[in-house]
Length: 315
Ligand code: GLY
Image (cartoon, rainbow, N blue to C red; front, side, top):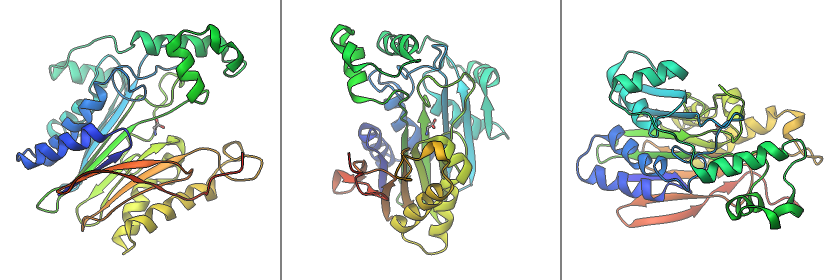
């Protein structure tokens, strides 16, 4: 049994591992792990407290895929519900559909007993307000001294339009696999923008015969290259998780647009892929260096480095 997750998913992976140990069904155990990250107000890229869209409204994307049945449930641009992964699981379990979006996803969640709440925390609102006031000019580090401490801390460590997500995948004692991806998407995105996270084959994919893959990063790249599907198919063809992940990243690199590249021609965006093969091997890969992943197994919890396609670029 093994659970892997993105760098921000340690509590999620540990909870999922415990739930699986307790005999909870695989997709439910994966979702209930991710719920801990969705509930965290200090995680600015997922669930409650996630950074809002350009209009200051939090819109969430999430999906869960069951490798046993090849079934997927997802929600996109969901407002006012803090646990989109739980709603995605209901889509999987209770409908013949795969993906519900916007108002329809909200109405489905309400019919399933979820309750609406304001997901925009004061911290996220202040960061959004700062972005709104400075978006014509980029972040202005010289003004940091006058900034609210939450905003200053954020501006000092993030690019102008930051992104993030949580991905978690598990293989249980039967060798069954499942995975979940949940996000508030690119900060300050256009209303209605849906990224890769709720789309099977892009932000996640699971097949008992081959394994799983899921992603953080520039969602448009995964949407245009079907990265998670590609990586799982490469594992099906016999590649190890590490090689499959790096090959999927090379495809993104090949197809990157000029605006996604720096002056040296290298892509300046980042995409991270987390892979788990059907025989229980795992890997984390990224375009840019400096990323880590969480691995939880019988021996406990480890943080492992992701293997970067690019070495660190010169400053
Ligand atoms: N990968 C998350 C997003 O692009 O929304």
